[in-house]
Length: 161
View 1 (tube, rainbow, N blue to C red):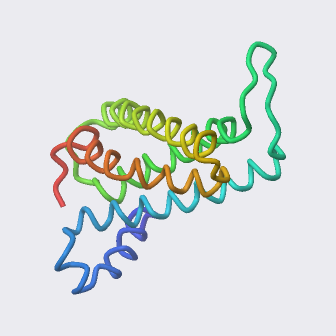
View 2: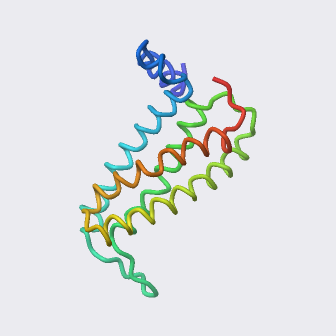
């Protein structure tokens, strides 16, 4: 049994009657995978921001980047690949689109999420005065609806449950 089949089996065991009455199976799988990747990104964000960058400004020589934005950029590749794999192998596993097409579309949809995330971080940290980690958590929820709609109707279009 492959890792993806094991994850699907585990997630489907959680798909019980009260949840099944409210959410279709595909949306539930997406929510569980997205939630796991989101929690993973929060742990990565906290760790990089506090222990790798030590909350300092990052001077690249031609621009100074705030540590909360630098952290977002550093964890992006890891969470991007984890999210694509989970979406392709667990949530939208029966999409007829080729993997390369899905990857390019996923990159485009994630680019939109990055723009929303960036704008939210700037708003929440610099204008509202929130701490960066809670601001990142809050901005993650703002991008959730956009992300699901982009995955379902663009990236993994025509995926059956």
